[in-house]
Length: 323
Image (cartoon, one colour):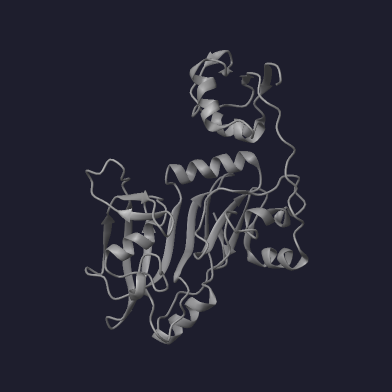
C-alpha cells in the first residue's frame, strides 16, 4: 500500500468532479471508497474536507490517502486496418477540441458480456496525431445510429459532459413509428424507471408518485404519415433517461419500427427492415472554444429505404456549421 501523496490539479482538469479525477488517476479505487475517504476527511482539497462530487480547479492540491497499487493496464487490441478505415469514414466534423461521428446501426458504444468489438475499444484510430485518446462524453444504444460527440482532451471532455448534464445540448432524433400518434405533436411527460427481468434490465413507464421513477420529457412532432400505418416523428428529448425515446413512443401506442424490446410484434411489419428505425439526426451545442456548433448525420441505409418505400421526403443533409 502506498503512502499519503499530494497531487496538483492539472490545467486541463478544471471543473472535473473529484470522484471522476480519482477514476482517472486511481482507477483501482472504487466509488464507494472515494466517498468514504471524503466522509472521513482522508481526502482533502487545499486542506479542506470536500464531497466526492465537488468540482476541482487547476492548481488545487488533492491529498490522497494510502491506496493499493493499480494493476497493470490491460492492453487494447490493435485496431485493424479495416476498422481504422471504417472509423475514419464515420467522421463528419473535427477540430482541435472535438470529433463528431455518425455511429452506424449495430455498433456498440462500449463493451459488455459477449461484446468484444465496440467503439470505445477502437478510439485510438481517431487520434489524428494527438497525444490524447478521444473520450466518449455521451452514449447511443447499439441499434441507434447517428451523431456522437468525442472529446479530444480531458478538459473538453469535462466541458461537454457538463453541457449534457445541464441540458445545454439540443438533441434531435428521427424515428419511423408504427401507427400515427394522437395528437400529432406534443410533449410526453412520463416518468421512467429501470427494472430487472428475465430478458435483462429494461426501462418502464411509471407514475409520478413512484419514488423509483425519474422524470422524463420528450417533445415530438409528426413530420409525415403514410395513412395510419407508419409515421415519421421528430423527437427532441429534454431529459436523457435510458431508452427514453423508445419507451415514450411505445407509450403513445406508436412503437418504433424494429424495436422488438419495447414494441413487441407491433413493431415488425412485413416488407420493411426489422432493424431499429431510430436515428440521432442532429446536435446543437455551445462549442467549448466559443460560438455554437450544429451538426447533422445522414440516415442509415435501412431508414433511407423505408423513407423511399413510404414516400417520405427528408431534408438534405446540411454541412456542419460553427458560428
